[in-house]
Length: 99
Image (cartoon, rainbow, N blue to C red):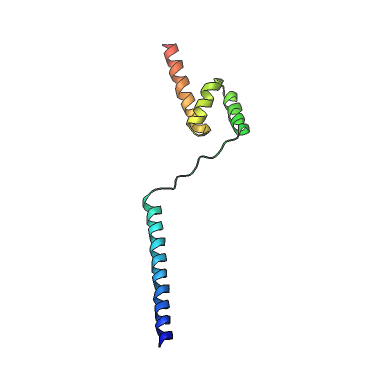
Protein backbone atom coordinates (compact mmCIF):
# COMPACT_ATOMS: atom_id res chain seq x y z
CA UNK A 1 0.00 0.00 0.00
CA UNK A 2 2.85 2.37 0.69
CA UNK A 3 4.08 1.95 -2.92
CA UNK A 4 0.69 2.98 -4.29
CA UNK A 5 0.64 6.07 -2.07
CA UNK A 6 4.12 7.17 -3.11
CA UNK A 7 3.23 6.63 -6.79
CA UNK A 8 0.11 8.77 -6.36
CA UNK A 9 2.07 11.47 -4.55
CA UNK A 10 4.81 11.40 -7.19
CA UNK A 11 2.20 11.66 -9.98
CA UNK A 12 0.60 14.73 -8.40
CA UNK A 13 4.07 16.25 -7.98
CA UNK A 14 4.74 15.82 -11.71
CA UNK A 15 1.33 17.27 -12.57
CA UNK A 16 1.99 20.23 -10.27
CA UNK A 17 5.32 20.81 -11.96
CA UNK A 18 3.68 20.73 -15.38
CA UNK A 19 1.06 23.25 -14.28
CA UNK A 20 3.73 25.55 -12.85
CA UNK A 21 5.72 25.25 -16.07
CA UNK A 22 2.66 26.01 -18.20
CA UNK A 23 1.84 29.04 -16.06
CA UNK A 24 5.41 30.28 -16.37
CA UNK A 25 5.30 29.95 -20.17
CA UNK A 26 1.93 31.73 -20.28
CA UNK A 27 3.26 34.56 -18.10
CA UNK A 28 6.31 34.96 -20.35
CA UNK A 29 4.12 35.05 -23.46
CA UNK A 30 1.85 37.64 -21.85
CA UNK A 31 4.81 39.84 -20.96
CA UNK A 32 6.22 39.54 -24.47
CA UNK A 33 2.88 40.50 -26.04
CA UNK A 34 1.95 43.40 -23.81
CA UNK A 35 5.18 44.92 -22.58
CA UNK A 36 6.53 45.84 -26.00
CA UNK A 37 9.76 44.78 -27.60
CA UNK A 38 12.64 43.82 -25.36
CA UNK A 39 15.21 46.47 -24.67
CA UNK A 40 18.38 45.60 -26.52
CA UNK A 41 21.80 47.12 -26.16
CA UNK A 42 22.84 49.50 -28.89
CA UNK A 43 25.23 47.89 -31.33
CA UNK A 44 28.84 48.86 -30.82
CA UNK A 45 30.10 50.88 -33.77
CA UNK A 46 33.80 50.54 -34.48
CA UNK A 47 36.06 53.48 -35.30
CA UNK A 48 36.37 52.11 -38.84
CA UNK A 49 32.58 52.12 -39.28
CA UNK A 50 32.36 55.66 -37.90
CA UNK A 51 35.17 56.75 -40.24
CA UNK A 52 33.33 55.20 -43.20
CA UNK A 53 30.12 57.04 -42.28
CA UNK A 54 32.07 60.28 -41.88
CA UNK A 55 33.63 59.75 -45.33
CA UNK A 56 30.15 59.32 -46.83
CA UNK A 57 28.98 62.53 -45.17
CA UNK A 58 32.05 64.39 -46.49
CA UNK A 59 31.35 63.05 -50.01
CA UNK A 60 27.83 64.43 -49.75
CA UNK A 61 29.23 67.84 -48.84
CA UNK A 62 28.63 67.79 -45.08
CA UNK A 63 32.09 68.82 -43.91
CA UNK A 64 31.45 69.95 -40.32
CA UNK A 65 33.19 67.07 -38.56
CA UNK A 66 32.01 67.98 -35.04
CA UNK A 67 28.38 68.35 -36.12
CA UNK A 68 28.53 65.10 -38.07
CA UNK A 69 29.94 63.18 -35.10
CA UNK A 70 27.40 64.69 -32.72
CA UNK A 71 24.52 63.76 -35.01
CA UNK A 72 25.88 60.26 -35.62
CA UNK A 73 25.88 59.69 -31.85
CA UNK A 74 22.47 61.31 -31.45
CA UNK A 75 20.91 59.07 -34.11
CA UNK A 76 22.82 55.88 -33.13
CA UNK A 77 24.82 56.01 -36.37
CA UNK A 78 21.70 55.93 -38.57
CA UNK A 79 23.05 57.74 -41.64
CA UNK A 80 19.57 58.42 -43.05
CA UNK A 81 18.46 60.28 -39.93
CA UNK A 82 21.78 62.17 -39.79
CA UNK A 83 21.50 63.31 -43.43
CA UNK A 84 17.87 64.31 -42.91
CA UNK A 85 18.80 66.50 -39.94
CA UNK A 86 21.83 67.94 -41.76
CA UNK A 87 19.61 68.86 -44.70
CA UNK A 88 17.17 70.58 -42.36
CA UNK A 89 19.98 72.50 -40.65
CA UNK A 90 21.56 73.51 -43.95
CA UNK A 91 18.22 74.41 -45.51
CA UNK A 92 17.46 76.75 -42.61
CA UNK A 93 20.92 78.35 -42.92
CA UNK A 94 20.48 78.78 -46.69
CA UNK A 95 17.05 80.31 -46.20
CA UNK A 96 18.21 82.76 -43.51
CA UNK A 97 21.24 83.85 -45.60
CA UNK A 98 19.19 84.29 -48.75
CA UNK A 99 16.54 86.53 -47.18
